[in-house]
Length: 317
Image (cartoon, rainbow, N blue to C red; front, side):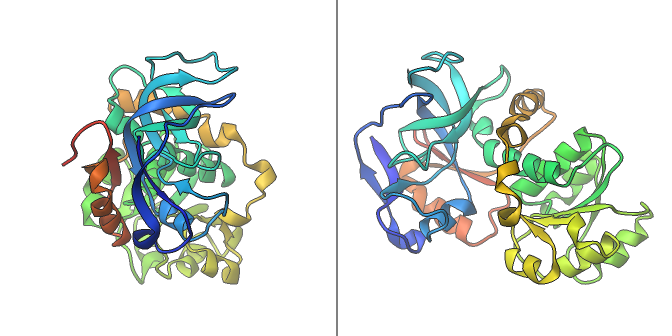
């Protein structure tokens, strides 16, 4: 089968290659799928550069959808032929989702009404957004500012928070501003003067802030917006600035409290909402597996404006 993987750490464009390798076998508690679509993300490029080092070679592409074609020992909730989406076992296999076949470690049935391409856009954005909102103890009484609502994680977080009944303020550019307003968020622009723009909305006290934007110097203003309480701000991107300000970040949250319930428990609910047209992660482009370098180049610009998907089983556009 074909797979995109790396044998040494370095810049993604230098170390990644499309190779032909044996089809992997699913071990106990794992399944294998014929991959329909695989999502790419900045996390893939961070892995290439050495984040979470592990045995090599290693594949890219955590987000996966496809049709089950093999089931490991102990798996009883799916059968060959079922349509599923979830995450590739990128840590336990020499290949991952960017391949013709992928071994999965977390999977969920794709509900009727949700196509496999849209399903592949969900896992990382949904799990990351859900976990961070749980860390912030979001409730229906919360007012939360989501910085970077035009990112896939931010866009998912806005929708999750709204479904949970929270009041949402979103910072976003013109690409998604109107869509976010239609969802029910109050939208303001990026840049200096953010506290004043938020205050002008007249929404009252903002108790929480979730930062998903590429590092842009916004954290001090987010702390100001939540009343000078850095512990009420959580970032998944600007780790360096977080340390200086006392802001919480993904990598320093207690790993013992990172539960599969927080990360994956919402998948069935939001997959059903996605099938009903009430939840989405925007897709910026789809590409045949052979055109993975084109997708990489777009992703590295930081201007993808949505999820980039590889389609091993068919043509992209």
